[in-house]
Image (cartoon, rainbow, N blue to C red; front, side, top):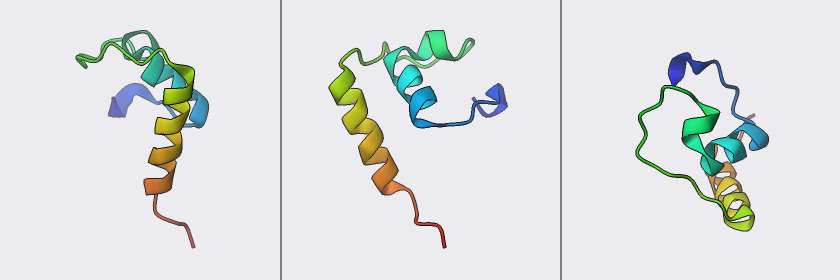
Length: 55
């Protein structure tokens, strides 16, 4: 995943959570994805809340 070159934005993270296998070929993650749009948005909002604040 580090070598994928992905820049994690809300859009790329949403696509990855929706379908990890499709959004990043070659990953071996055993996660089928989350199809519910609202739940993905909630998860992304939660993850953003955990980010450290920049000075």
